[in-house]
Image (cartoon, rainbow, N blue to C red; front, side):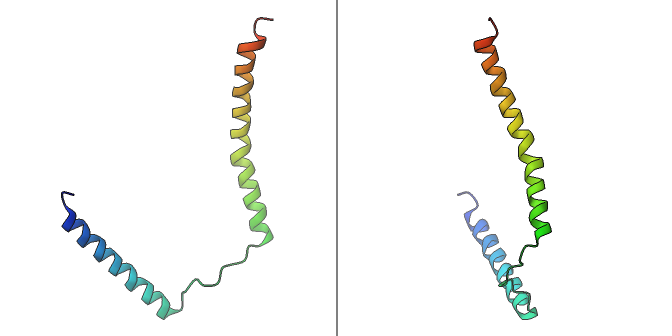
Amino acid sequence: MLFSKKATKVLDEQTELFENREKDREKKGLVDDEQEKLQWRDLVAMWIAGFITFVPAILLVCALFGLVIWLFFFRFM
């Protein structure tokens, strides 16, 4: 690599900064050992977001397949 020494130096510095931040977080008591439990409203919001995201995409793909099938098979009947 052209700048391997510089890249290694930067990675080492970033690793050291990350470790220092983690130590500071542990001292302050901000450790994320416990996961937050999802509430039912969060689950409902995720379902709605999923429907809003995936349903139009699925409909678009089905429409494209239908158009291809119509063009190849049913157009000349």
